[in-house]
Every structure is written in C-alpha cells, then in structure tokens.
Length: 174
Image 1: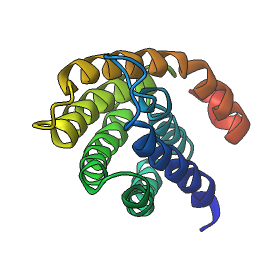
Image 2: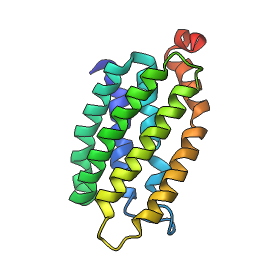
Image 3: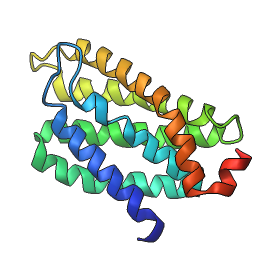
Image 4: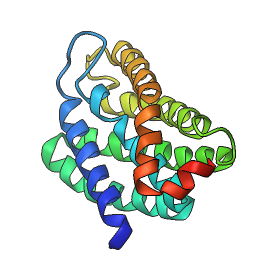
C-alpha cells in the first residue's frame, strides 16, 4: 500500500465518521458532518498535489470502497448509498479541477476544486439521502454547503503547511 496508506486511512475515517454524524443535527441548518466532511477534500488535494491525479483517484476509489462498507454499518443504507454516489462524483470532480489548475498560484487549485466538489457533493447527497423523508434537507443542505465553503477557505493554510511537510521541494515551486 505504501504511500497510499495514510491518505486512504484518513479518507476512511473522515467519510465514515461524517456518514455517522450526518444523522445528528446541530440546528435547523447543520449536521455535525458539515464540520468533518470537508477534510476529505483536503486529503484528496494533498494527495493530488504531492503525487498527482492518478494516485489521488486511486485514493478516492479505495476510500470510497472501504468507507462505504463502514458507512453501511454506522448509518442507514440510504445514507451510505447517497454518500457513496456523492463522494465518488464530488471527489473525482475535485481531482479533475485541481489538476486543471495545478500550475496556478498555490491556493487556487485547492480552493476552486474543493468549492466545486462541495457544491456537487451537497446537491447529490442531500437530495438522495433525505428527499421525501420529512427532514428539512434543503435548509440543511444550504447550511452544510456554507460551512463546507468556509472550511475549504480555512483549510488553505493547513494545506500549504502540510505540503511543506510532505514534499518540501514541491512546496517551494508551487
């Protein structure tokens, strides 16, 4: 597994815990998962910047397969299905957008790719997981997206610092 191990394990932890936490609202606008799930984009972007889009996609696929199995155990089958589909589409979009912006100023690829991924993830996940259930999912989705975007912005400095730790030579050139 080698260099895949840490990002895959991190992805499994983030996605599985988020699928559990999405079942618990903080208020009418948020669930606890809104605070944990954005870290998945950080993991994908760090992998993409450090090792390229091919390895980032492999981490997404492995994280998807293993996290969905755990999610079925931690959450309902509907939430696991919604999460799996949303995760796969959003993370692969994140990898693509990040790679397209790779040569731009260091903060642009993670911010733009995480924003695009968060928007599609929110739309897919909440519409599948909660439509027709009586849960005020549109309201929660709006709050969730707002928090995801704020966290994406807040994770820019940790992204930069972690790149220095993972690949110091790469951090100086990007």
